[in-house]
Image (cartoon, rainbow, N blue to C red; front, top):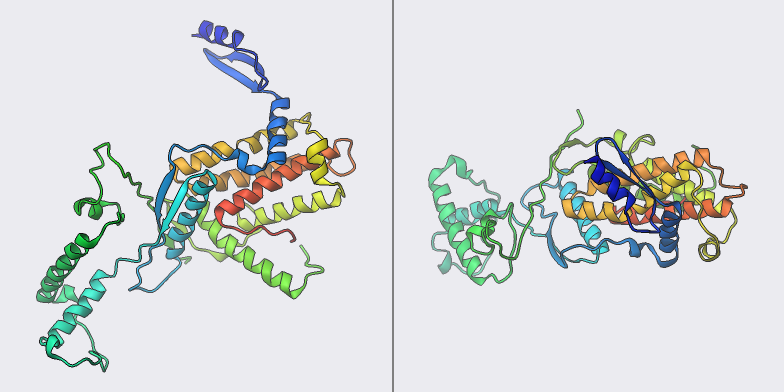
Length: 380
């Protein structure tokens, strides 16, 4: 095994991306990427835009059914999860050049309206003979169908008739729940058959109940920034979790300035923007005329993480996991802070190169914020 690996390492063709190759252990080929190649990848993105880092997905068109609240019930924080996750998945796929058709199926009200219809049939058995007038002129109570077996039987029969009547007039495919109803109705093929269209059920866990100085801020700035921080904090607190796991809805945790929170990430973004501003350099000119150097280990680590953006977006799209993007964003901010601590930016000989690294970090952070549906702030 080791001999084969040594042969592979020794006979790799010349490539600008590879700095060296070696064999470790019983048979692992370690390949070190070239600093020059990493820097060029970042520089090309700065010149041509972040869209050049969009991954290529195997699908071209996707129908995304999300949010879909039960309009017969009261809204609550649990409805945020499907909405924020669905919108983020749509944005990730659109960034990857997939044509996304958003659908908000406002369903799951059949039983409630069925109860009302059945009550009206009982109240007005000769409804066809009635004059046109409001059917309900006073308050009333409806017996719950679970406590009235006859009413439940009639309700099911009536809803079944409505269902098949609806099916006959339906021409578009709608995925309900995990697709069981749609397959039973004949709208979707059997999942074991290699036929299109194909569907993926994006399961979601439950949302459980929870048992520095400001200077030179105008009222408008405070109001705008507080809204962006608040909305972003709620969205990120949801999206950073694996979508299948439950999480506790807690404002204290969401608004913390420490750890993996939107507020911390917004602070990191605002700080990097401030560093770039203090440099007094023309960033657009630097993109065209300066070059990036990755001589320090922390510069290289930051550069390596930046160029992983495309593969991270691809993974998040493939696995339908927005949390993958959140992990990447938090790690990016941590790596930048480590870089900034060990590598002087302002006033150093490497200032042009390091300002470009700051700019690349800001661009990637802003694009990730956009995919997550969060508006970045520039001042905190």
